[in-house]
Image 1 (cartoon, rainbow, N blue to C red):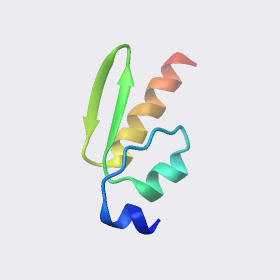
Image 2: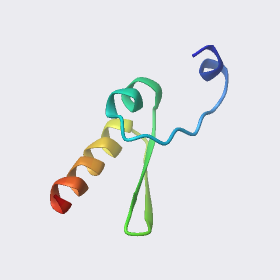
Image 3: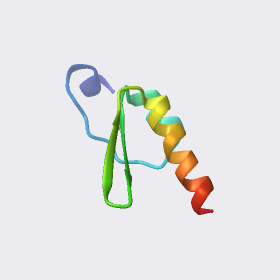
Image 4: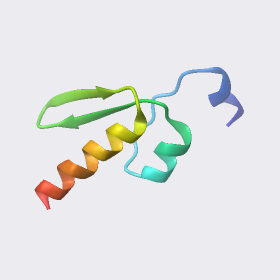
Length: 55
C-alpha cells in the first residue's frame, strides 16, 4: 500500500470492493472498445450495467 501512495498502478480486477478502495479512475472494455471513466464509481456502474444486459 505504501508504494501505491507514490506511484501509478494499473490494476485489473473484477473485485469491485478492491477497485473502489484503490482506484480513482477506471476503464471498461466491452466488445473490443475501451471506455475511460474519470470516476471509478462510474466505471463500476457501467460494468454492472453491461453484465446485467448479458446475464
